[in-house]
Length: 264
Image 1 (cartoon, rainbow, N blue to C red):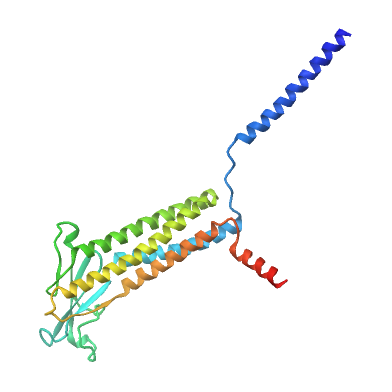
Image 2 (image 1 turned 45 degrees about the vertical axis):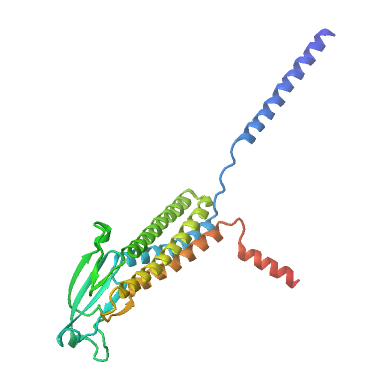
């Protein structure tokens, strides 16, 4: 009888140890961190398409920031003599004064230009980035604070642009969508900064023109500003696309489902 009792206790002990091991294994698995959600192939394809849109904005930004055709300043074409005239154009970093032949200028045009006509150019970098000196263009003086502000906004926008690209590249390479929201913030914020840079730059141009009213000048924003402005809009659009792709549901499908329910 006692032998049967001990054998029964030993068997119950083995069963208890086995059940405890299973429970411990389940508890160990439950204590691990959940694996990150992997993106599907269709979602990855949509992210790559949105990234192409953002890269268009990045390319336009780099093109606009690297060129000096943000604004053209043109005095009357017969200001000095009837043979040549001068037109100036500048961007964030340097200014150029180009000497043109009056014969090449459109006869119906009262001012010299445009700056794309062939002529001899003399370009200099702005010194307010190094020595703090203002530049003088056609007897008019630049506003150092506004010019620096415009350049800093553009550089900050470029920084957030690069950070957004890094987030998207990491998200695609690791197949995880949790970096889409930071990338969306970076691209939207960079687009806003780029557009603010254009606004501040235009204010600096107006301050330049008001520095010496005695010198008549005609000004117009040139193609570099068009590139940068388009880049800001494209970057904001790319950020919105990344934000929509980061949502746990498809907004289009959800709207379609609500429309079907309302129809029924």
